[in-house]
Image (cartoon, rainbow, N blue to C red; front, side, top):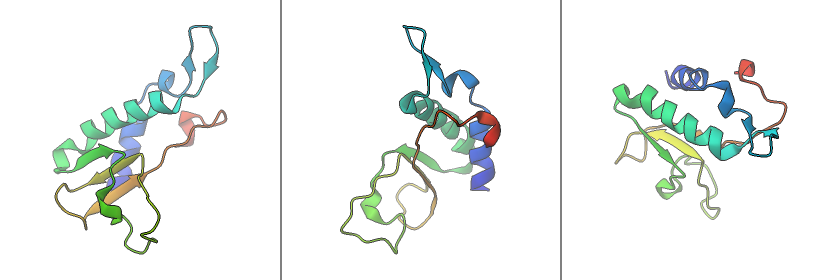
Amino acid sequence: MALEQLREAVNAIDGSYYNVTTPDKNVKPMERVFSYELYHQMRRTFAHHNLAVHGEFEKQLRLIPEINRSKKIIPDMVVHESHNIYNNLLAIEIKVSKKLRKKQF
């Protein structure tokens, strides 16, 4: 379910959020521009499933119980049940690439 909802959110993003035209007419990927639109689309997509979408959410490092707790891990986005440390559906880290195109997802 979670991956299908993520795919729906990504597919709802307009291509202009993948590569942004700057004021000096350069076209380049911008992680924050894409991330904010993905966040918006994910909130829309997951809203009817009683799931929260949060950006840069720490959640006491219990996203992946097997991780080394001495490292601070804060993913770009988390889809989870609020007030519950065990039901985490997605932890997402976003990185941009000049080669990435929407059709790849």
